[in-house]
Length: 428
Image (cartoon, rainbow, N blue to C red; front, side, top):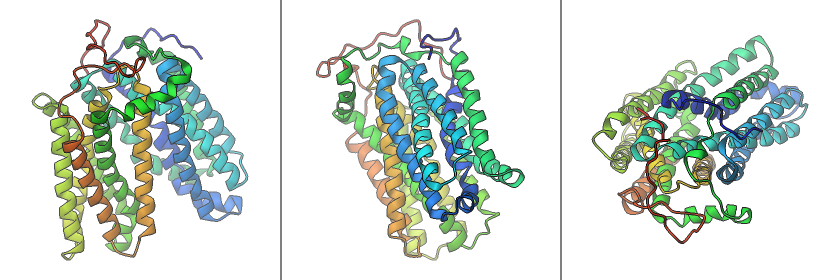
């Protein structure tokens, strides 16, 4: 794989679009084939559950891909890791079109997810290479609002392909999408590590940088705030079909509209982030978003478990509880990444892995304690909202770091990095 950056002007909006499209490889790989799971089970002569296991398999591989790809990208660069991941993604997607058993599907999905993890982990690291503080928060917000399109359209695309073709067509689409992204990354994505010093320590020490991240207490506070706020959303996602369709009796045709209301609030909050950043610091907006989320979840808990629940009271509270991720995610990520200028890939990998793992645990706990009521999901949302607020107020540091930590010499802080003329223009 080529390691030299293409001759590309660093236009922030164009770069945000490229990075968002790169992130979308994951939701496309997960959400497009969900409608086809029963058909795949019939084709394999297996149970639906045997095919559903491939979702968990994918998430495990996705986390592993980030854990491996993050620190390696700090050492050899972002583009080689992204290109390698996309090649793996394309090849395994093509192989899946010819698998004949659920076991083979699970193996290929695991490998496919490792490639997807490689591709995704360079996104946050690239932003950290180029931007600091509020500029990073603006860039993360811009990427997030663009990539939200993927999980919205993916299930619909999968359903249409299933009606007109067969389930294999869904993975052909993934091959095409991955190939387009490979072309775009090869010719358009800059090597962002040239704007920051790469990790220069011995190769044998590269994995120890994870320990260095975990030892940075104040940064871990921001990471865990983001994890808790995201777990509120993951808890709802896990139980949303039961909540709306089974508990409230909403028809499956209406469900996508209620679900889409949450995305609308996320987008609105996301777009409010830029004007707020002109007046407030990242950590202040994070506290506001986490506080509103907690108040909404408390209201939701009482509306469902104490009073007589109705859609008119529950839906707006869910929208606020989930929608606040539009404020918390970009500011928590930017605040966390500010501590790690030299190992952005490692930091991104650790944050993504903990976030996805916590969401998976939340889903499993809700399923385990499911009792035909909404008590388990509301308890989960309430606990994680409280956790996020505790982290942002008592563990995360209210000020961004005055020094950048040098993980080539883990115990010695560097002097602040000077701003250079090679930095790109504002992300607004």
